[in-house]
Length: 124
Image (cartoon, rainbow, N blue to C red; front, side, top):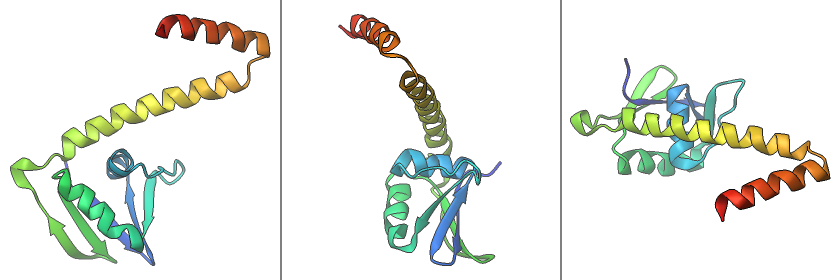
């Protein structure tokens, strides 16, 4: 199983997919495009992405077309798996929050008032 972020250049953008996208979402807050299962970012954000990966000791490879142009392997220090796990946990929380938020938006005023009372009691 691969344990590095694979970044692929496509025109003036870079893309990651699958678990790699989850890692960039976790580290940088980039939105995962659900239908593509990936994260894209412009050339201007390249250094920011690379710096975040290096600061967190996440191994990575950068490709242009099919040619590997840059690689950084942190070997035993590589935190790919632990950052991926944190990202998956964080994503689950976000998805749960979004479901609750969408449900709250569909409630009547009276239903919303009842929910707010429960929440206020729980956090006070």
